[in-house]
Length: 252
Image (cartoon, rainbow, N blue to C red):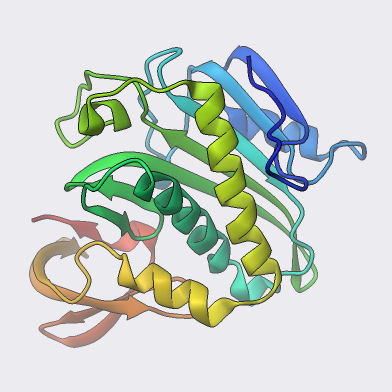
């Protein structure tokens, strides 16, 4: 089953495996409130019955075929004003893992979905607890499509579909744990400039003209960046506008 990775200092040194649960993020949040729960604890399941995604969506995952897990982090070093960098470090870690597996076109769809060849491969859900001006507790939920071959949505794909290979899930978790820890340590070192530069370079649709929907209207716009609060900056017919996660959607 899932073993402690040899290539990390703290991340996934404690692994909590449950065969089935509603949501690993919910279980991880409960565990995070216990004083003995260590930084970097991973909560993982083979069957997540009520997995949650961005915008209140559910996450579709066939039991035993994918990686569905949450990481408990305690980033007390991180000011609240920089909390979007949690999205950035996690997205880049997934990118790093995939870059070693495929030559496909990998992009980060703002704020933190991972796309390959224009289809969704991975979703990330980050839930923070704030204490004063710092982020005291973070639950990092990851749903990575690995060996699943059929999806109800044509916009979804998996690593197996992209590469025509099957993967050992425990081994893949070990690799991903190393990628996550490396990027998290980069965040801990406050390497904000490099992290953001890499994130923007990999952003889906950046500096391309596409159709978006916002405020019950569709318009042609161009993503030009992300501000310090994590809002998407889009050049619209009205000029540069700022959008939060639930305020804009991608059309084509």
